[in-house]
Length: 120
Length: 111
Image (cartoon, rainbow over all chains, first blue to last red; front, side, top):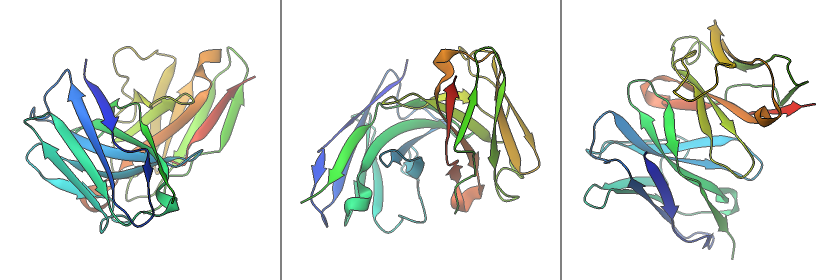
């Protein structure tokens, strides 16, 4: 059973960089066929795709956030990370990491999510 | 890159069937048979219910079914149960540039 767990600060100041790490257990990030994603959910709102990374390092970012998002992978630690720069209150959300299928484009495993609040 | 359109809420009585629509465009739902549906209970992570329009993952009840016609995908829940009360989101592949789009979400209420 694959499990994902987000970790990182729950409070970030405006204009700073939000940094989160997702630790994967029960499966290897280096196994092919899957991409590793960050998805966020504003309080009481819907889901927003931030981007994904493949174990090789290939990335895709949501065009609306592309200039501020960076996703990286550390296969030796079985982790991948999210950096979101120049944050504002509008970036306050629950951030989920997740695993997706490359072929069928669904997300089958999700982390529980971590609330990140942007406030001074 | 606009979200797929879903009704804000759908309700039904126990035992009834309900259908949630997910309307996109010819650039996403209408072109790709890569629509998935997710169930989310309050405070929980989303759960995959349907993928590739109509396929059910192992462990998902056969009361959940999916279909697509043109630019609109649908999720049907038959034999509605209290535990089905949750938010539901559709998601579609939208090509290599846009990649993925989620729906606006539908709150299902069991009366």
